[in-house]
Length: 362
Image (cartoon, rainbow, N blue to C red):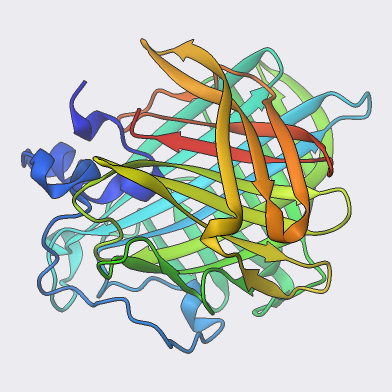
């Protein structure tokens, strides 16, 4: 399979360029071209001051950006569900924003629901400049076609809550209300998320404290659900190095109230690199030492003509964490134009809880 067919939300930029404009992606540019040249686009550097609500809006000087939410849900009988909502923006060219159809922004939406016996997904595309898709800071709204993530009355800019999200596919839909009583947290080093030692990085913040209530509909049958949700906001111009081939990313809700974000970046001719943040019940986010993180596959699943590691052993020695993860549905394949694995997980060990796993580049 070509490298442009292995793209997830973090590898959207050049892959979408292939679909929209027929450009070829060189393997020498790294995973999906995200290690390629980004001349003319803004650079990510340490020490940025985040400003809310302004940073909830797009950053068109940067090449790639997303608004991304995952929710771990259950119904009244305790059956587990997952929901994903993602809006991507990519600038096809740098420079001042042009009006109408001349606008250089391309937008893509992904939505999915997962149950123990099924995974459903949908995808939609839009061109910028004509109102079909976009994002606004105040009042907050991110949308593509009829899919929306929008602030409700009294929304706190620091909490980005309350929100309502909705999406509809051919055989599923969902509507969720999201509330949070704690402020956003900055991932990486105060929001600067290093992806390589050669300077590749992104700006990255999260809202890991959402509670969720709403309805999920699959094949015309609706159920009321509630649970926990996690939102990521990230933007960059060159987030990967040329020799980085993909990643494995977790967002985890620990039963003790802590939150954990981890990722492993796989590289050619080198050991993987690790990064993560431990987020306390009080909202304090602390970057983890890469040397303290272990992520080891322990079970494989064959899906979409490839084998993927769908169960993992994870350790964070500095925090006394040692867990094993289990997918809700091992075949949670996003068979979109840019395909990847993404779905809800549970875990046991020194800590118990739920979360989400994304894997790309396999």
